[in-house]
Amino acid sequence: MSPARAVARVDLGAVRRNCAALASRLTDGAALCAVVKADAYGHGVAPGCAAAAVEGGASMLAVATAEEARELRASGLEVPILTMGALSARELDVALGAGSEVAVWDGEFLELVATRGSALGVRPRVHVKYDTGMGRLGHRDPRAVTELVRRAAGDDRVEAAAAWTHFATADEPGSRFFDEQLRRFRELGTALRAELPGLALHAANSAATLRDAASHLDMVRCGIGIYGLDPFQEDPTPRGLEPALELRSYVAAVKPFHHGDSAGYGQLWRAQQQTNVAVLPIGYGDGVRRGLTNNGSVLIGGRRHPIVGTVSMDNITVDLGADTDVAVGDEAALIGTQGSERILCEEVARRLATINYEVTCGISSRVPREHHGV
Image (spheres, rainbow, N blue to C red):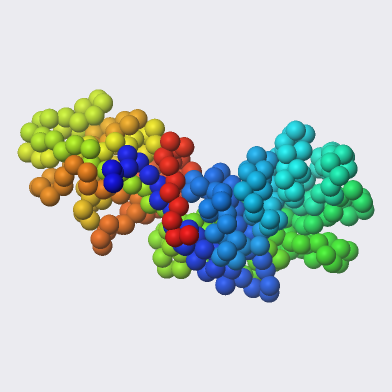
């Protein structure tokens, strides 16, 4: 078999096991909602990751856009879907046509949901968002949130399904603001439940789910954790999470370099001694960020080798040093494991001064996702 120029291999078994592990931590009957927006955080969403998440224990799926909801439903999945993002009138029709539940945060949009639902012959389930401190969508005033929930509950054209919020600092262990947001939401939720016992409450992302059982409420919305990535940007293994994605390429050429020879645009790296350099046909056009120039590693033959020279659109160069065992056609791992060595997304993120979310979401669409572990 010819080597793959670039491929992201995704272990669906790992996704299932991560969901099962997260679900096992939930308290008081809380349900697991798997967040599969942005092409499952770059892992490839349907029918692979989403179905694996359901098989692992997720009873609901969450997305950000109407088109994501439509694609999920078209894949044959019948579980409830929540579209969490802002929707135009046209996008709302797409979401409702997919049978998706939707987020609302003001009276005007609630009326639009009710009107379009009636026109489409459906009774939409709505989740009223409370901005407890994230500063994005949602009312900041708990009285306005209460009034909107009451209005939804009193409108026969819609069903008031839930109230929800989102944490700004759940992934910062020392943050007291997380506790303040949780206090605000629980306080309002208790009052709302006194009026509407069937109203669900949800707030926790992956970080909150792992951090504080008090945030579990009726449902948690786990995204990064179901893919085996650590929301705290550390090694996910101690948390019982298993990375699902590996990014692979191969050695397209091996070239001898003499002292002073340069590699890549701008001659940003020069050989300090006689060495060998491997060329891999993968670059920033595939999501290998230019910030890894002289600032990253690749695994070849179970050994680490530094990325040297400028990351270009379609190629990177790797210093093999004294390693003479590397040959054209050898597989290379930019994220993943070879032998006893591994490169985690969290390591790549640290080198780029970013987060693991951006690393996987940044793998471009020209890199095929190969799902295995079905």
